[in-house]
Length: 370
Image (cartoon, rainbow, N blue to C red):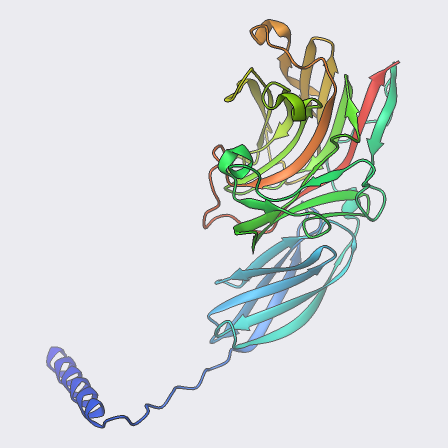
């Protein structure tokens, strides 16, 4: 066999030399072989509701893609194996364009539809709309079809130094990464280029519009996951513009590092100059991840006292006694909701990170004592 192989190699070398001596005659180009026998299956996830997975197969395909025609815009997911997933935030019937690729420009495609039902009834924890001894000071149930701009505004861009954390996303305004529908706010982080950055997301805030001093704050949300994904529900002191950070104080009601999808963190930042001093604690689920269902993240906030809860279980407490005498938390604060991508703390996306990623917020409610 070795001799036969060597002879074959010599014949190939000779042929190559002969072709090289033929001068400038053009070599024939092999025609592209398009994929064929394109088939697929569609599966709906039990949790989180709204998640669909396509498994595609085809002969002669080098990779596959699916474009999900969501209300917030088209989202394309590619896969070398043919398995792609996407989570819709709202009920409805959606078109999906499936492709089997020989290359980016040569492919065959097909159209399918998915029907999402009762995503607003996804399993999870919830809290009441009233508490004894409290009045409802403000709430956003996200019951309309657009973000309430009388309560919320947008941060746009990548800030200074990636918002001080070397983050990798560009925050947009409008409905590109932030939509309201079917009783939910959905913030979506996407892998796409904008403003010189490789990812987009949204960061909304109530600064100058809805600011509060003390109360019980309930936020019901379902969180994203994945290496480099960093969702947060948090607050800054309303004097941020005049005194800066961390002098204004920061209360992180919930932060999640995407490679630990079953654990959230509650943190207070304070101090006279960067970097901040912080007091932090974490809460872990006994089973499942925070992406599987809705949970309620609660801050109970009084004069000289802040307590953090997940699903009404307390896991962290802050008082002036454990801040070294610096305590900027007896003033008004405003809300910020966002998904960051990358940064000093979570690290950066890698080959395991699936995009897009979504944070769904069912409601935010602020109750204050009578």
